[in-house]
Amino acid sequence: MQFEFGISTHCLSSTPLPEALEMLAPLTDVVEVMDDGMHYLENVEPLLSFEFEYFLHAPSRGVNLASQLEPIRKASVEVTQECFEIAGEVGATVIVHPGYYAWEAERTQAENRFATSLEELRITAEELQTDFFIENMGNWPHFFLKCPDELPLIDDQGFVLDVGHANLNGCLDEFLTVPIDHFHLHDNMGIEDTHSAIGEGIIDFGPVLEAMERNDAMPIIEVDSLPGVMKSIEALKTMKSA
Image (cartoon, rainbow, N blue to C red; front, side, top):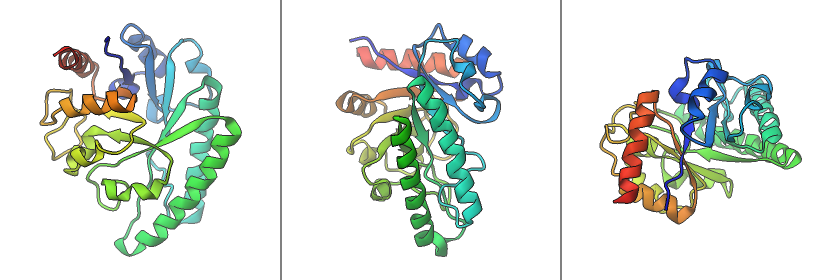
């Protein structure tokens, strides 16, 4: 069976989005747009010149769906809802970060704030007839959804397994046993979130490939350079055919 994959525009984050999409067109039919920085989408126009199947990674810099500061939480929901509106125009699913808390003593309150944000986003998603998945986070203090025992925070919402993030927290094997709707693929040495090419770190991708097939979930290569994408494609194809 031919290996199918998508590519995140993260690998071309310093390139204007139209040029980045043009560069990815020969490589894949599936693109996840990192809706942030130079790839921030003010409207749907940049996406309409291509025939990709799209996923959109909602803005995450400066956004906190679990903020204790209600104006920031509400603004974070609104920014994410704007991403949903664009996603609805191209039939895309949206990837969302779960947020964080500033102080350990605030965790319970932050969980409640995130639950409120999640419900508001679900209402918007239903109105716009789009969907969204929540992504696990790396080894950063006070971020939600770093380990599988935090999955109840997202209830039955779709789940994105970021393989590199799970490796940083030493819980990739455990995450691979739960239902997964979408994958982010990149490698690291278990210390820093380097978004290295597959094969340049310590992750064993054999079980990851098995989980991808078992869940029938789309894999997105989310590495930090276009040469890294090419190296990752070759590594994945080799593993798939082994």
